[in-house]
Image (cartoon, rainbow, N blue to C red; front, side):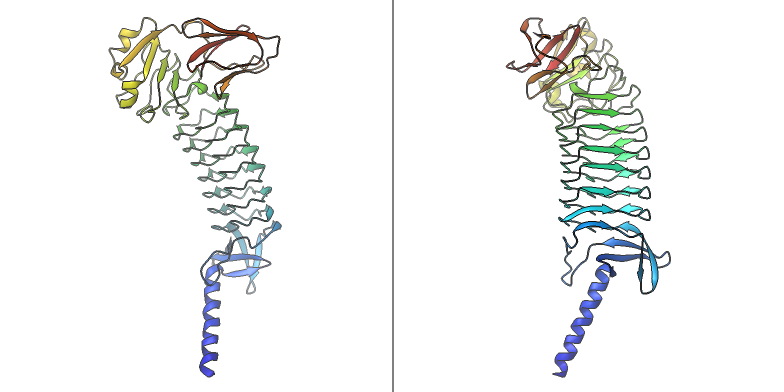
Length: 414
């Protein structure tokens, strides 16, 4: 009996020590670990049981995290929302974070499906990896002017997110930061941003417009891949070299080719481009056509295009420039080069009250149009293939077409 009691006491003591090590202490339903005894700072953490498993879904409703807590008669400041602190708390609906918090850790709110609102204070400087991933009910978020970096996957799969305000303090948007945020319709990236990560806005299906400032010097691979509804992206005219550009991202002011890895079958290179970055197209095996409007071949080394592109993709160059392109790298490496008359065609998608022309799922859409607006479509040889009144054109085969609406002429790819 005595041995049984001793073993029971030992087990109780062991569990007590394990739990204490797992999360430090509990106060009013939240759990904390001490970060610094000297500075008296703590982080909110997820409780862990004696089996060392995270106890998810331990809290619900609306919560307000305190800026200070008392433990063993000592006051500690809450300076961090720790790793997985509220992960998969599916019944959590809103969170208010105090101004004492400087960091929201990795996966802090991941899987909080019921979270509809969160207040991020100006004290926060960093959003961790996957911080709000799969918060489906979150509809809007404001990144305060204290945050300098938006972590990888911070808002990935937040499909209910319809608006996001990024402050002028943010310098980097991490990989996958807003990927699969299908509810987003527009994003304005502030002048403070220097880099946009890989897949940062990929598969934001509702995204229709993006403004990229001239501060951006790096855009990661596939940053806007799968954004099928994207009708326009404004690129300031002194951007640095990033790589390749999709036809839908055409901007006639850029001088060094911009990376926007949405290119699937064709790429438009405007006349203003004078140079192309290293390995800009090397990863695009799906390209079938490149339309280069530049009379003087843009400079670039032999890493610009991959072997598959050089063999299988057809390069279209301005009339009278074939011999020039066939004499310089990397253009002379193409197996198929043809001349094409680009004169009289406005390659930019028009807006500002004019009909906006875009292509979605093989259908040409004319914005601001009605049954009284005449639409004419010509194939690349100049043959008229459509003439009617309305706002859509469908049933055309894949290829390049010229669309004329009133006085506006736009080239599109189906």
